[in-house]
Image (cartoon, rainbow, N blue to C red):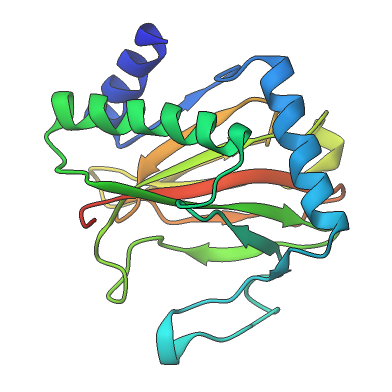
Length: 203
């Protein structure tokens, strides 16, 4: 785990993002997927919205996924174990990158067939405290034909953008600075499952 944490810190420090395959083992990934599936079947998920507070609204032409927020005070054993791993990421980033991270919030995310999320930044004027985005993919399988990649727009020194596409492979972790990397989820041809969250500079 320490080696993976070092790689995450180095990636964030050097290029503002990092992709780690097999961040969790297959047994743990499958358990998270099964729990997400069970919660979905129990009707716990809701259509995702954009904005917060009075600005919160459902805009399916921008975002068409479904989410279930995790309750920090009522985590399942599996959620608690994953939460602890994210806590380790937080501690390493604070130690190596001096980001002043204080807390984490996260949700299960499900993208039904045909769904997407248009280009956006995770950190904006309503949530300036979102510093680092952390995404773990828990799908059983994935191939290029399934599409649904995470597309990141990486700023270049000459003012242009480099596009990086990453498929939601089982057990893949993606970590990036929330205020620096615009990104989108391309339309998916297969149900797409993840845990998405943010390390924040407030409690």
